[in-house]
Amino acid sequence: MSVTLDTRADPLTIAGVTFDSRLLLGTGGFPSLQLMAAAIAASESELVTVALRRVGTGPANGPRGSGSLVDVLAAAGVRLLPNTAGCRTARDAVLTAKLAREAFATDWIKLEVIGDEDTLMPDGPELLRAAEELVDEGFTVLPYTTDDPVLARRLVDVGCAAVMPLGSPIGSGMGIRNPYNISLIREAVEVPLVLDAGVGTASDAAIALELGCDAVMAASAISRAEDPVLMAAAMRDAVRAGRRARLAGRIPERRYATPSTGEAGRAHFD
Amino acid sequence: MIVNGEPREIPAGETVLALLHDLGLDEHARGVAVAVDGEVLPRARWEAFALPADARVEVLTAMQGG
Image (cartoon, rainbow over all chains, first blue to last red; front, side):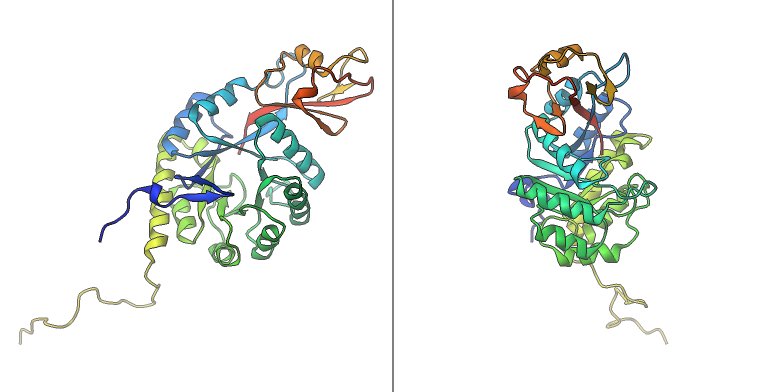
């Protein structure tokens, strides 16, 4: 029996677009564009997020156009996934999504509607409302959601192309706090399941894939690591390992030992 | 007129493209989008669209973000 080590044989498909990589990368938090580009290359990610913010209107407050960021991402050959980061209402998120479609010429949107300042957890009712409206407007919607299987199913029911539940709060690095819920979401939806938020290190990403997630989104875990490029490579490997472990089918957990060496034929010395 | 939340002295009837020039941008700026009074203004209309005196304008651009 041969082992397929070629990730191209096991692509991720979202809304009809296939990706060899199962790692989505957030561009926030990198200290420089050069480091961001090197981390993207090391991660082998093909889908990266960008945000929209106001152009600076006064002297030296805010960016004067974003040519360099867009150029660096274009040179990296990645597909852009604009987000609605910071939006607190469905109305703001829908308008931001429409502006992102105009700015980046893509109808893909990572939909975020935040409902709590401390945890940055999603506002379920506003999220669902925005998702429905954006699907009706022809967007390919990837919603950042809580780890609630019922809300995940509702988001799929209104036409979302994927669901992106949190493992723990954004930037917290606490990993997957409720693996049971993530596995329930896996059973509840057939669209791609992308673990978003909370990943702190490579093992968190591997666990996500082992639980049945199709992909992992990582931002701070990479961009704020001491060595972002090395962590990007670690995440790349972790996602592959977790996916293979999922496909391989793990052994069940047992309370007591099961001998790995059979009793039959053991020598008796008395 | 309010541009990105700040009052700005702009002659009524100035086009969106002229405003973008003021901000150091042009019609080829990548990753830029404009909303006027809560509605997206497509790039194709930047050159001809005359801003009302009391317009609320948002000029947004790509930023690094998760």
